[in-house]
Amino acid sequence: MIRLGYSTVSNIDQTYIPRRTVMYVPGHDPKKLKKIPNLGVDCAVLECEDGVAINMKVQARKNIREALEYLIVKNMDLALRVNSCSSQLMEDDLGAIIGSDIGEPAKVERLPQTILLPKVDHVQELVTFTERLKSVKQNRKYCPYLITYVESTQGLMNMRDIMKQAAKYSEEGIFRMDGVVFGSDDFVADIGADRTSDAKELIYARQKIIAIAKAFRLQVIDMVHVDIEDLEGLKRTSIEGAKMGYTGKQVIHPKQIKTVQEAFTPSPVKVKWAQELIEGFEQHQKSGKGAFVFRGQMIDMPLLRQAKNILRVVENVHRPS
Image 1 (cartoon, rainbow, N blue to C red):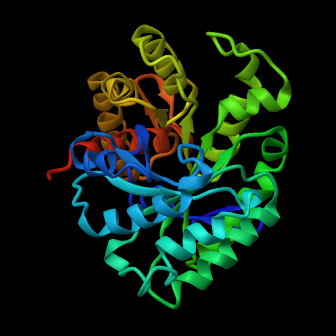
Image 2: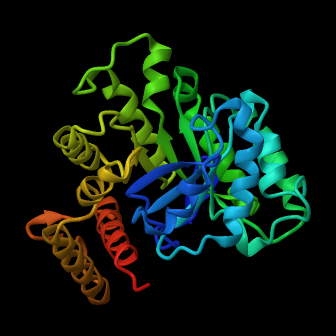
């Protein structure tokens, strides 16, 4: 275990769920929900929030509850994005989809593997979500992965404290904190900036989110590329995000999936480097010698962790169906 202040997070050998591509599927549209198994994305998000009009929320919850019963997916994280705590709709989302607001409580094996919680600006919002999740679980053995969003200056400034609280809840087995998403559009509006093609106005926020998330050993999902026809721009920003340390990216159209997945899949050269580094480290450990040098470079734990992360991505992305 790795200790961060008073919170503890799991070690680097825990189960890894790839989320190179995170795509939202509006819950009010049954036709789109039925297409999910053929999308080829790493994480398909059953959407209750921004992609669903206020007068369609009830229908979206019903459709999602039904979709969880009939959707059969392989090598895909089937996730749910609820509304924010501030919207006062989150409680109804969880009650209808996971709890017993619609008939009997949903079966554990037919619940979303991951829950995405948007617009987490304060610790109290995480507390409110957690209390509601505990109540709708009704003592069933259901421990979803949780991914939260940073979409405002308040969320960014409070992110460290929010992650500390999330780590505590993870230790208690309520959920498994697993990642953070950067909601860039809302963030740009919050700071009053103009959105530019190179996203210079977001450099500080993107880097700070990475730094805090990686301190808690979490995945980090990068911003949306809104121009679905601009595949060259998508490729450029995807590669840039991967080099910065992001582990995946939000996508809003199927045509974006392949480009993003390629950018966030380790290259053969990187895979070979990681394999050889880990093999060399293991041999070095057996020898009982001092400092470990690999290809002329002194190797420390962060580099070893980076190598393990590369192999975890590849192993899980290419695991057999």
